[in-house]
Image (cartoon, rainbow, N blue to C red; front, side, top):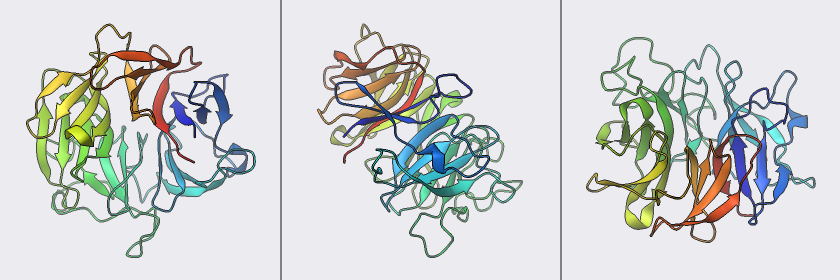
Length: 311
């Protein structure tokens, strides 16, 4: 039961273009994706978010600018401890122009896939792996809230960009489902976290607060009806009350966190926060905000997404 971590990656000599595993003590286990099974011409580059789908398989955002894809790997690791490559679930091409530099992958309560793309600033929706009304991995019809928009709206758009709609996303980052089942989206350049109806795509509320400076990563805190928000510019995590809209700094200012990226709950109940600039994964008591030490420091690259994997 290890931690999975993705890194900034790119053409670096240390070959961080994979999901790397660390045990509960912070020791590096190794790579978790079997790149040997990739199709000719494919590469793992700038991996971002990952999620286990309703079918149990592992889905990963491959974010390199000329190879924007959602890759599918076997959910259970093989004898070598790595997940075997199963295929490309979705990819940027003429029929799917919206998938460009994907930031994350999230499966909705209905089993369909939602993907925010940084280069088009949309959140797109794709038929999930068990879909029967459409081919899995293909863009779904636009929801009611955006169906009437004119112009070159990319296929599958669930949340449009500012280019396509007034009040649309300016710089999309994380998109995740909250404790109420609706979709929450971080808009970095608007300093906002928006809530959208999970069926119609309608904007239900835009959370804006002076503490929400350049929000990037999100993490639900269902027990408190809150959303935790990583603030890139303020170097902390914010606790956003989803009922009142109030926001407060969650973490002790002396904790040493520089540039938060991935957020995750650990098996010990602690909050784990990846620090891009500090190249570390830090632990905190979410109730008090006090630091509880580091899982790992001195990482060879900037961590992006983290997650504890059972099994």
